[in-house]
Length: 171
Image (tube, rainbow, N blue to C red; front, side):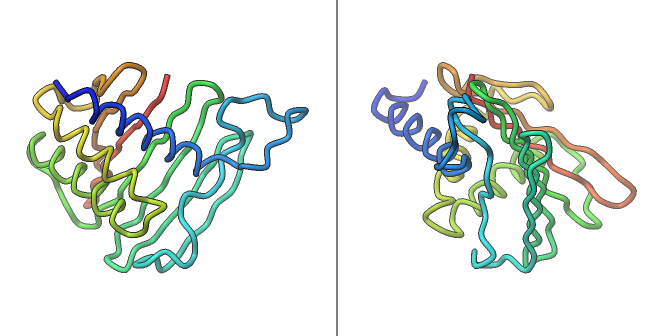
């Protein structure tokens, strides 16, 4: 169980992640969503990013980031008053044999992402919250990190690549 002050801190950081990910100049007539229209999480100038794109598709944000390491990250932001961020880290020529290795790599990727810039630091808080609850993790099953805050880690295997799929949700 997480201590109460830490839970409040995580809640604030989670809100910050979703706030940053949403367009701050939303128009009420076009979008009555609590979190607004999704916007890019990364910037072209984010350290270690070699390629970046973002587009809105039916009020869903779709972002692709290519890192210097060759890892490709796809982020899908969806929802209105209950929101999800699905992060898909594509690891080239990598197989993940065990669930423990999957969870460890997923948490490490989130934490590394959070270290790239101050704007991304809430992802390190997500990584810590997931790690603190790692005994509850089961591949593909959502766990409650705190009231209204959920996460899951899964994998998708395609030919020689593995995609680590992390879903972060606020409901």
